[in-house]
Image (cartoon, rainbow, N blue to C red):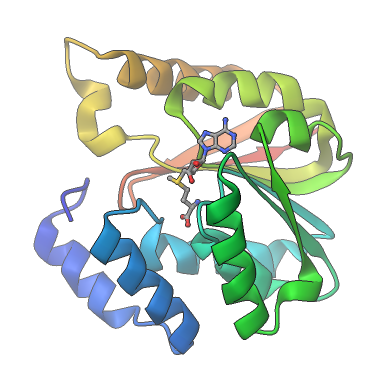
Length: 208
Ligand SMILES: C[S@@+](CC[C@H](N)C(=O)[O-])C[C@H]1O[C@@H](n2cnc3c(N)ncnc32)[C@H](O)[C@@H]1O
């Protein structure tokens, strides 16, 4: 772990946050062993809590990988559903396996393909979670903001990009993240905050 907060503080919170669900533990193990970039358990808990508070009818996730973040969302759902998207069918097949094991399959749809294109087919999205290529974040919101319900929230991961957003010489991805953050804070009908949790999580509320 090498993110925003003091590593000892990060470890302290991390160790308090052990999931009780063995399926989440198994998914974490796969993520850590293979180096697949899951949001991990601190952000997972945040997604769960935001979802519990919001009680969404529809969550759409851009970039689901093998389902770790989606699994946290799905666990929080009461009557709503979550749409998981990924370019890789293998990832989503693995996600389906974990959702089946966790009795969450009926809450989820799995869609292989370009995430923004798939998401644009849904209206009244209550939570839009963004975790695809960083260069696509801004375009994703430009395309999908009208598909979000009033009172809906956008959650975007990696918005501090290991702290690179404050560096002088920016690579392409960092530049894209910075532009995305500035764009989100400039939108008059959204109210945004960046939480310095793990790699930076932007949460944005659609006011009108
Ligand atoms: C950071 S991982 C997602 C991790 C996942 N959100 C989690 O925490 O468990 C990013 C995923 O997005 C997928 N991806 C990247 N760009 C995409 C796009 N444009 N459309 C759909 N999936 C995309 C990749 O295949 C990868 O599995």
